[in-house]
Image 1 (cartoon, one colour):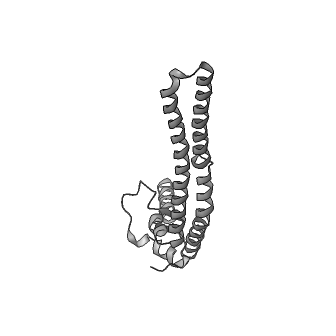
Image 2: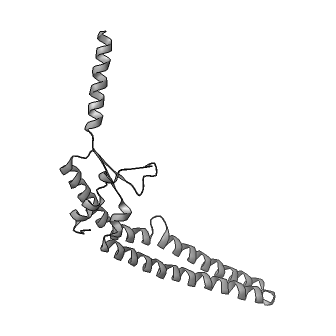
Image 3: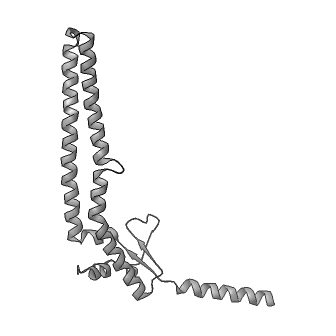
Length: 171
């Protein structure tokens, strides 16, 4: 009997502690779409990316043109001239791949630029969410946009609009 009462007591304590936790949702995509600075940063990244891709395409085109020219003239070239042309082609192809890595690689210029433009916006959003959570007593906040395992969530616990208001973007 004592064991049964003890187990019941622990079950009630566990249930109370689980119910004491409050959760909230945010939709990061929705929040970001409503922040003009994010849209401007995205546009800057897109334009810079296009410029860099154009530069890479130019070098790649030069390599292709050198190769076509080499193919059409190869029968008239000496071994030494062939070797020199092949090295020129390889150097251009290597230059294109180095540019691609420099601009679009894991630690490339695009990554650095994205980090410098987006980090302040993300920090601002994080701080706003943190302040709301501390004020309202939320234990956890889940991003609806990136949480693939959420099947349904009540709109009552979505604090996305509160975050936008806290950031100064009333909706």
